[in-house]
Length: 306
Image 1 (cartoon, helix red, strand yellow):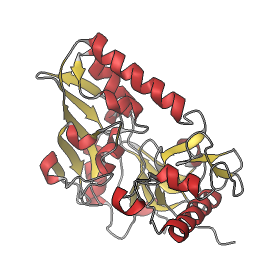
Image 2: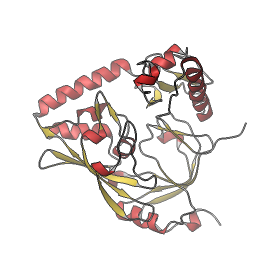
Image 3: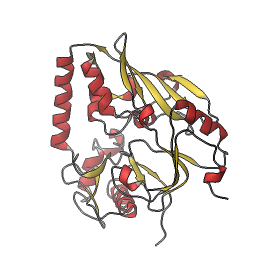
Protein backbone atom coordinates (compact mmCIF):
# COMPACT_ATOMS: atom_id res chain seq x y z
CA UNK A 1 0.00 0.00 0.00
CA UNK A 2 1.43 3.38 -0.99
CA UNK A 3 1.44 6.37 1.30
CA UNK A 4 -0.75 8.28 -1.16
CA UNK A 5 -3.46 5.61 -0.93
CA UNK A 6 -3.65 6.08 2.85
CA UNK A 7 -4.24 9.83 2.64
CA UNK A 8 -7.63 11.57 2.50
CA UNK A 9 -8.80 13.27 -0.67
CA UNK A 10 -8.01 16.98 -0.89
CA UNK A 11 -8.89 20.04 -2.95
CA UNK A 12 -5.27 21.11 -3.04
CA UNK A 13 -2.32 19.18 -4.46
CA UNK A 14 -0.70 15.90 -3.38
CA UNK A 15 2.62 15.28 -5.13
CA UNK A 16 4.64 12.07 -4.72
CA UNK A 17 8.44 12.13 -4.53
CA UNK A 18 8.46 15.92 -4.75
CA UNK A 19 11.91 17.57 -4.98
CA UNK A 20 12.62 19.94 -2.11
CA UNK A 21 16.11 21.22 -2.90
CA UNK A 22 14.72 23.82 -5.31
CA UNK A 23 12.47 25.35 -2.63
CA UNK A 24 14.96 25.61 0.23
CA UNK A 25 17.41 28.47 0.43
CA UNK A 26 20.41 26.16 0.90
CA UNK A 27 19.42 24.29 -2.30
CA UNK A 28 20.15 20.82 -0.93
CA UNK A 29 18.22 17.81 0.28
CA UNK A 30 16.24 14.84 -0.93
CA UNK A 31 12.56 14.68 -1.91
CA UNK A 32 9.36 14.66 0.10
CA UNK A 33 7.66 11.26 0.03
CA UNK A 34 4.42 13.21 -0.45
CA UNK A 35 4.11 16.99 -0.67
CA UNK A 36 0.72 18.50 0.23
CA UNK A 37 -0.19 22.03 -0.83
CA UNK A 38 -3.60 22.76 0.74
CA UNK A 39 -6.18 24.82 -1.13
CA UNK A 40 -7.13 26.77 1.99
CA UNK A 41 -7.48 26.48 5.76
CA UNK A 42 -10.52 24.20 5.57
CA UNK A 43 -8.68 21.83 3.23
CA UNK A 44 -5.72 21.72 5.63
CA UNK A 45 -7.93 21.15 8.68
CA UNK A 46 -9.81 18.28 7.06
CA UNK A 47 -6.56 16.68 5.87
CA UNK A 48 -5.01 16.89 9.33
CA UNK A 49 -8.10 15.51 11.00
CA UNK A 50 -8.35 12.52 8.64
CA UNK A 51 -4.67 11.61 8.17
CA UNK A 52 -3.68 8.52 10.22
CA UNK A 53 -1.60 9.48 13.25
CA UNK A 54 1.20 7.04 12.39
CA UNK A 55 2.05 9.04 9.25
CA UNK A 56 4.73 11.68 9.93
CA UNK A 57 3.73 15.23 9.04
CA UNK A 58 6.28 18.01 8.48
CA UNK A 59 5.80 21.67 7.63
CA UNK A 60 8.08 23.48 5.21
CA UNK A 61 7.73 27.24 5.10
CA UNK A 62 9.84 29.46 2.88
CA UNK A 63 12.74 27.06 3.38
CA UNK A 64 14.99 29.84 4.63
CA UNK A 65 15.83 28.29 7.99
CA UNK A 66 15.68 24.59 7.07
CA UNK A 67 18.32 22.05 6.12
CA UNK A 68 16.67 19.05 4.46
CA UNK A 69 18.96 16.04 4.67
CA UNK A 70 19.97 14.14 1.54
CA UNK A 71 17.59 11.23 2.17
CA UNK A 72 14.57 13.53 2.05
CA UNK A 73 11.46 13.56 4.22
CA UNK A 74 9.34 10.51 4.97
CA UNK A 75 5.59 10.92 5.33
CA UNK A 76 3.81 14.11 4.33
CA UNK A 77 5.45 17.49 3.93
CA UNK A 78 3.02 20.40 3.99
CA UNK A 79 3.79 23.62 2.17
CA UNK A 80 1.23 26.39 2.53
CA UNK A 81 0.34 28.00 -0.78
CA UNK A 82 -1.05 31.33 -2.01
CA UNK A 83 -4.24 31.08 0.06
CA UNK A 84 -2.08 31.53 3.15
CA UNK A 85 -0.01 34.40 1.77
CA UNK A 86 -2.36 37.35 2.20
CA UNK A 87 -1.41 40.42 4.25
CA UNK A 88 -3.85 43.21 5.16
CA UNK A 89 -3.93 46.21 7.45
CA UNK A 90 -6.75 46.53 9.98
CA UNK A 91 -8.10 49.31 12.19
CA UNK A 92 -6.07 50.28 15.23
CA UNK A 93 -2.67 49.93 13.54
CA UNK A 94 -3.06 46.15 13.35
CA UNK A 95 -1.96 43.88 10.53
CA UNK A 96 -3.17 40.36 9.72
CA UNK A 97 -0.89 38.00 7.78
CA UNK A 98 -1.14 34.46 6.50
CA UNK A 99 1.59 32.06 7.56
CA UNK A 100 2.95 31.74 4.01
CA UNK A 101 3.41 35.50 3.64
CA UNK A 102 7.05 36.50 3.49
CA UNK A 103 8.23 38.49 6.48
CA UNK A 104 9.37 41.30 4.22
CA UNK A 105 5.82 41.50 2.79
CA UNK A 106 4.54 42.11 6.31
CA UNK A 107 6.98 45.00 6.70
CA UNK A 108 6.17 46.49 3.30
CA UNK A 109 2.39 46.26 3.77
CA UNK A 110 2.70 47.88 7.18
CA UNK A 111 4.79 50.70 5.73
CA UNK A 112 2.22 51.45 3.02
CA UNK A 113 -0.52 51.53 5.66
CA UNK A 114 1.46 53.83 7.96
CA UNK A 115 1.96 51.18 10.65
CA UNK A 116 5.24 51.37 12.57
CA UNK A 117 6.87 48.71 14.71
CA UNK A 118 7.02 45.94 12.12
CA UNK A 119 10.00 47.33 10.20
CA UNK A 120 12.34 44.64 11.55
CA UNK A 121 10.52 42.00 9.51
CA UNK A 122 12.18 43.37 6.36
CA UNK A 123 15.45 41.98 7.73
CA UNK A 124 14.08 38.54 8.67
CA UNK A 125 14.45 35.88 5.97
CA UNK A 126 11.51 33.52 5.66
CA UNK A 127 7.77 33.54 6.17
CA UNK A 128 5.36 34.35 8.98
CA UNK A 129 4.81 30.71 10.00
CA UNK A 130 8.49 30.23 10.73
CA UNK A 131 8.64 33.55 12.57
CA UNK A 132 5.79 32.39 14.80
CA UNK A 133 7.38 29.02 15.45
CA UNK A 134 10.85 30.32 16.36
CA UNK A 135 10.16 33.87 17.58
CA UNK A 136 12.23 35.28 14.73
CA UNK A 137 13.69 38.74 15.04
CA UNK A 138 16.61 41.04 14.36
CA UNK A 139 18.11 44.36 15.41
CA UNK A 140 16.52 44.30 18.85
CA UNK A 141 12.92 43.30 18.05
CA UNK A 142 11.34 39.84 18.08
CA UNK A 143 8.05 38.45 16.82
CA UNK A 144 6.66 38.22 20.37
CA UNK A 145 7.06 41.99 20.77
CA UNK A 146 4.46 42.75 18.08
CA UNK A 147 2.25 39.64 18.06
CA UNK A 148 -1.32 39.82 19.36
CA UNK A 149 -2.40 36.26 18.56
CA UNK A 150 -1.63 33.34 16.26
CA UNK A 151 -3.99 30.87 14.59
CA UNK A 152 -2.99 27.23 14.18
CA UNK A 153 -4.41 23.90 13.04
CA UNK A 154 -3.46 20.92 15.20
CA UNK A 155 -2.98 17.27 14.27
CA UNK A 156 -6.66 16.55 14.91
CA UNK A 157 -7.72 19.33 12.54
CA UNK A 158 -8.86 21.70 15.26
CA UNK A 159 -8.51 25.46 14.82
CA UNK A 160 -6.73 27.15 17.72
CA UNK A 161 -6.48 30.88 18.38
CA UNK A 162 -3.62 31.46 20.79
CA UNK A 163 -2.86 34.85 22.40
CA UNK A 164 0.84 35.69 22.48
CA UNK A 165 0.94 35.16 26.25
CA UNK A 166 0.09 31.46 25.78
CA UNK A 167 2.89 30.71 23.30
CA UNK A 168 5.74 30.59 25.80
CA UNK A 169 8.15 32.68 23.75
CA UNK A 170 11.85 32.90 24.54
CA UNK A 171 14.92 33.65 22.45
CA UNK A 172 14.38 31.86 19.09
CA UNK A 173 11.88 29.51 20.73
CA UNK A 174 8.18 29.01 21.32
CA UNK A 175 6.44 26.49 23.55
CA UNK A 176 3.69 25.90 20.98
CA UNK A 177 2.99 22.16 20.53
CA UNK A 178 5.06 20.59 17.78
CA UNK A 179 1.95 19.40 15.92
CA UNK A 180 0.51 22.89 15.47
CA UNK A 181 0.63 24.28 11.94
CA UNK A 182 0.46 28.05 12.12
CA UNK A 183 -1.84 29.54 9.48
CA UNK A 184 -2.27 33.20 10.46
CA UNK A 185 -1.01 35.96 12.73
CA UNK A 186 -2.36 39.26 14.01
CA UNK A 187 0.27 41.91 14.72
CA UNK A 188 0.01 45.20 16.59
CA UNK A 189 1.93 48.26 15.47
CA UNK A 190 1.50 51.98 16.03
CA UNK A 191 0.51 54.81 13.67
CA UNK A 192 3.22 56.67 11.76
CA UNK A 193 3.72 58.14 8.32
CA UNK A 194 4.52 55.73 5.47
CA UNK A 195 7.59 57.83 4.66
CA UNK A 196 9.06 57.50 8.16
CA UNK A 197 8.40 53.76 8.31
CA UNK A 198 9.92 53.23 4.86
CA UNK A 199 13.02 55.20 5.81
CA UNK A 200 13.64 52.95 8.81
CA UNK A 201 13.07 49.85 6.65
CA UNK A 202 15.57 51.10 4.10
CA UNK A 203 18.15 51.56 6.85
CA UNK A 204 17.64 47.96 8.02
CA UNK A 205 17.95 46.67 4.45
CA UNK A 206 21.15 48.64 3.86
CA UNK A 207 22.69 47.36 7.08
CA UNK A 208 21.76 43.78 6.23
CA UNK A 209 23.18 44.02 2.71
CA UNK A 210 26.46 45.40 4.03
CA UNK A 211 26.94 42.77 6.73
CA UNK A 212 25.29 39.54 5.48
CA UNK A 213 25.81 37.32 2.41
CA UNK A 214 22.21 37.65 1.26
CA UNK A 215 22.95 36.84 -2.39
CA UNK A 216 24.56 33.48 -1.60
CA UNK A 217 22.91 30.08 -1.13
CA UNK A 218 22.53 30.45 2.63
CA UNK A 219 19.99 30.02 5.40
CA UNK A 220 20.43 33.00 7.68
CA UNK A 221 22.00 32.55 11.12
CA UNK A 222 23.23 28.99 11.63
CA UNK A 223 23.64 29.04 15.41
CA UNK A 224 21.75 30.82 18.15
CA UNK A 225 23.80 33.36 20.05
CA UNK A 226 24.95 31.79 23.33
CA UNK A 227 24.35 33.20 26.79
CA UNK A 228 26.87 36.08 27.20
CA UNK A 229 27.69 34.88 30.72
CA UNK A 230 28.92 31.50 29.45
CA UNK A 231 30.52 32.76 26.24
CA UNK A 232 32.53 35.64 27.66
CA UNK A 233 30.29 38.05 25.79
CA UNK A 234 31.11 36.53 22.41
CA UNK A 235 28.35 36.02 19.84
CA UNK A 236 28.06 32.91 17.68
CA UNK A 237 29.90 34.43 14.72
CA UNK A 238 32.79 35.52 16.92
CA UNK A 239 33.19 32.00 18.28
CA UNK A 240 33.08 30.47 14.79
CA UNK A 241 35.71 32.99 13.69
CA UNK A 242 37.92 32.44 16.72
CA UNK A 243 37.83 28.69 16.09
CA UNK A 244 39.29 29.34 12.64
CA UNK A 245 36.32 28.48 10.46
CA UNK A 246 35.73 31.73 8.56
CA UNK A 247 35.68 30.67 4.89
CA UNK A 248 37.20 27.24 5.61
CA UNK A 249 35.39 24.56 3.56
CA UNK A 250 34.18 21.03 4.01
CA UNK A 251 33.17 19.78 0.57
CA UNK A 252 31.05 22.50 -0.98
CA UNK A 253 30.13 24.05 2.37
CA UNK A 254 31.76 26.88 4.27
CA UNK A 255 30.95 29.66 6.71
CA UNK A 256 30.73 33.03 4.99
CA UNK A 257 33.77 35.26 4.98
CA UNK A 258 31.41 38.24 5.29
CA UNK A 259 29.47 36.94 8.30
CA UNK A 260 30.73 33.64 9.68
CA UNK A 261 27.48 32.55 11.33
CA UNK A 262 26.04 32.05 7.83
CA UNK A 263 26.45 28.65 6.17
CA UNK A 264 27.13 28.87 2.45
CA UNK A 265 26.54 26.30 -0.29
CA UNK A 266 29.00 27.12 -3.06
CA UNK A 267 26.85 25.17 -5.50
CA UNK A 268 28.47 21.80 -4.90
CA UNK A 269 27.49 21.11 -1.30
CA UNK A 270 25.36 18.24 -0.11
CA UNK A 271 23.22 18.49 2.99
CA UNK A 272 25.76 16.17 4.63
CA UNK A 273 28.56 18.65 3.86
CA UNK A 274 26.63 21.47 5.49
CA UNK A 275 25.62 19.50 8.57
CA UNK A 276 29.10 18.00 8.99
CA UNK A 277 30.63 21.47 8.84
CA UNK A 278 28.20 22.77 11.46
CA UNK A 279 28.81 19.83 13.79
CA UNK A 280 32.59 20.07 13.34
CA UNK A 281 32.52 23.75 14.26
CA UNK A 282 30.30 23.07 17.28
CA UNK A 283 32.75 20.45 18.52
CA UNK A 284 35.77 22.72 18.11
CA UNK A 285 34.07 25.69 19.80
CA UNK A 286 33.14 23.43 22.72
CA UNK A 287 36.69 22.07 22.93
CA UNK A 288 38.46 25.42 22.65
CA UNK A 289 36.10 27.72 24.54
CA UNK A 290 33.79 25.48 26.58
CA UNK A 291 30.72 26.95 24.86
CA UNK A 292 27.88 24.90 23.40
CA UNK A 293 26.53 26.40 20.18
CA UNK A 294 22.96 25.37 19.39
CA UNK A 295 21.60 25.13 15.87
CA UNK A 296 19.15 27.82 14.83
CA UNK A 297 18.75 26.18 11.42
CA UNK A 298 16.18 23.39 11.59
CA UNK A 299 17.62 20.07 10.35
CA UNK A 300 15.04 17.55 9.13
CA UNK A 301 14.85 14.36 7.12
CA UNK A 302 16.83 11.19 6.58
CA UNK A 303 20.58 10.87 6.31
CA UNK A 304 22.13 8.91 3.46
CA UNK A 305 24.60 6.31 4.72
CA UNK A 306 28.02 6.47 3.14
